[in-house]
Image 1: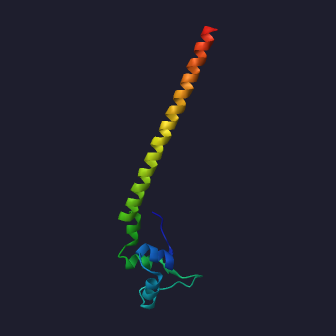
Image 2: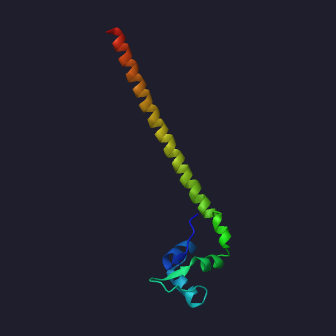
Image 3: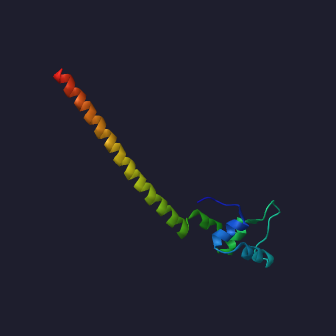
Length: 108
């Protein structure tokens, strides 16, 4: 899992499935502190603390990350199967072509 350093308002709103006004209200209430950077950014450490996560927890994928990875893996497995089928067809065609050529040369 990628280690984050900062989050934008939009990223937090998406992550927490809430509105950007909720994030700004949390800032107003003192739950989040804005960094003195261009744009509105919050320290990942504070975000994770609000979520009840220890930074060591970030080494382990979350349930949502696991679901995303499993879905991605499933899609990749399907693609591998499709490509294996294509390779089998190409191999079969090439083998047949070589066999036909050998037969024609023997008959000549």
